[in-house]
Amino acid sequence: MKPGLLEEVPWSNDSITAYDREHFTIYCQILDYCADNASIEEMAERILGIDPVQEPVRARNAVRSYIDRANWMVTTGSKHLFAG
Image (cartoon, rainbow, N blue to C red; front, top):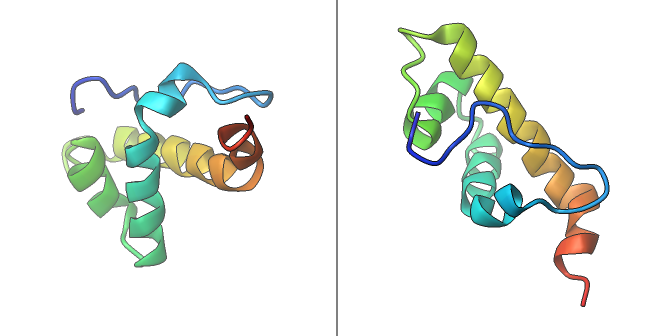
């Protein structure tokens, strides 16, 4: 795992977290890779720094966590992101 990244993204339904602000570019990368139909394994290795061959379950769970939060940021979190 790349330094500073957590395997499971801290979650809040009410607001954007400090972790979200610090790792916004990771969420953007995740969404970009998803738009390009990248595999979970590719995202795990290239974005999160997890070897999907050595740790397939960990890789899948971590990527899923980032995908879920990135989607929340785009749908619900954006109102918090752009609020004054």
